[in-house]
Image (cartoon, rainbow, N blue to C red; front, top):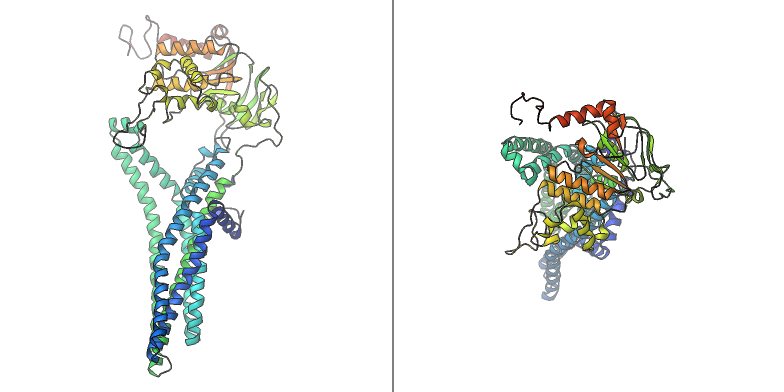
Length: 627
């Protein structure tokens, strides 16, 4: 089990509390050192304000009773007013500094988080529900957890300053009550820490339900799903599923909230009893003349201040503790390391000259999954076109993932001119590939950007973009758009700053999007290996013919792998490999495979039958109109 699979309850103690605190502070210091220093100084200063207010109030009252001079009283009043001004302005300044710290730390952490995610060279973690839950929590807490830790630590120090000042004053009046107030604060601290642990655990436990809620939310609000949702009338069904997940997470949150209310109500009652007893003692003592009016005022303020400081201390400790627990999700992602083994001294990959070999390749996604490939051995000689065919589930797309090194074979090896792909630099290797995936992407960017993503060096080279688009048969369509290649291919964003003149972009048809994906692949024309996974699946017959003619012309003496369910598109390949149940069932040229009268011949004949005018397709009676 990988680190990213471990839940908080069973997570290894890979980093201590001190290390996490140090990480949080280093992130804040690295993002905004000046803001952090100002925030620290202001927080410490505000910790002394309640004590100063109480002390000055006592002095004012005592001097009034003693008949002090107007100058003395004015000076004390001025000091009290100044403390009040500072106390009034401090929260706003502190809030600004905290917000600025949030923004800067959030930016830094988001950069580091997605730098780490971009460093995952494979796909396994993106197909792992536990990792996706952890990544979502890391995204949610990336900007807040370090600042929660910093603010919590400063809150603890501030509460400590306030507590120390009030305890000193209270000790002079009643050491016994001082001890009683402090002892009564211990359950508050323990309860808050326990609740913080429970809340952090709850956040992890409801992660799958919240992610499913977001999934249904996206289905109900996305353009991609809108047609089927309305046509099939499944909006109510999906909404019910979404609300059920919401109720599940709300129930977990409610249970924690109720426990917190019960705990805090009991602790509040305890604090009230202690405070009441102390007040009765102070009143009776003042009646006997042992305490002055100022002393009573100071005593009341000190008891309230100590209790408030203790409660604040408990809350800040709990908040810091929970923030550190949540920070672990971020640290687990950013320190996870490579998801595939990387060679410490990568072997250089020469330009392909011999060929690519799959040597007894076995693969399954985990020990709990069935085998997808069961000992595949085949060779793609340099300069040849190999076609891969077979039924759904035969392992064709999995083989493409292995060739792109999104996964490594469970056993066996894939060799590039004799070099095992695991011994090469994965980024350098992928620069040698041009790929069109069956599930190609639609990017909500301009047409030029959609093509240039295939090779960012071409982003500002219009001629290269146009050449690639012409080869894919999409140039005329792009050139006719309102802004040509600079037209935004999306209706979910505006083409300029939002306002009265802002307009959304345009959308392409499915076939046009597929041609755009082909243009991205054609932009990488100098690559050693071209992989085309169902490149014409969404095209009409004429477009399919044009695309495959372009592919044949582009292929030349390049090495290519073509996967298609339309066997007419692969018949001119140098070699055709038939996958069946994860094994190479047949291989050879079209004519040889037809003469063999095996799986390929069966599939080819089955498809061809649908195009014969004198033979009815499956399920249609002779003489009846084909569907």
